[in-house]
Length: 175
Image (cartoon, rainbow, N blue to C red):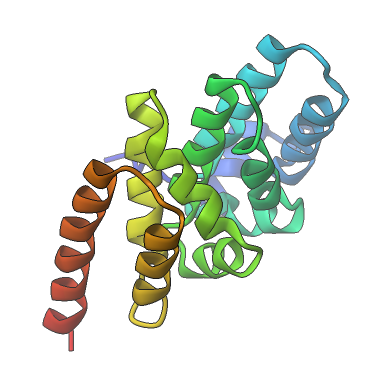
C-alpha cells in the first residue's frame, strides 16, 4: 500500500540521482510567485504550494522558506482565488502544531477570521479548518475574543461558537 505522504526514500526514488531536491523546487516556486505580476500565474503557483503544505515531509521546508507567511500575505489580496489558496495552504500546514504556532505567532488568527466572511465557500471552509487546527487550550479563548471584537456577521459567530464548543469538548475529552 502506497502512502499519500512522502518520505526520504520515496523522494529519492521520484527525483533520481540528478533530480531537483524538494527544497530547491519549493524555493523555485516561491521565487516564481514573488516575481510574477500576473494573477493567473500566481494562482497556479499558490495552489501548487498549498498542495505541498498537506504533506508532513514538506513542513520544515515550508518553514525554512517562510511559505506560511507568504500564505498569510495572500489572505490580504483582493483576488478571491489567491485568498482561497492562501488560506487553503494555511489550513493544510496547520495540521502540524509547529506551523500552527508560527501562524498564530505572526498575527495570522485575525487574518484567518476575516476569511470567514468570504463569499467563496472553500475559503470559509479552509478558514474554519485552519482555526480548528490552531485552536488549542491556550488559544481558544483568544480566537473567540478576536472573533467578537472583529464584528463579524452573527451567522459566522454562531458557526464559530459551535466550532469552539466542539473543540473545547475535544480538549477536555483528551485530558
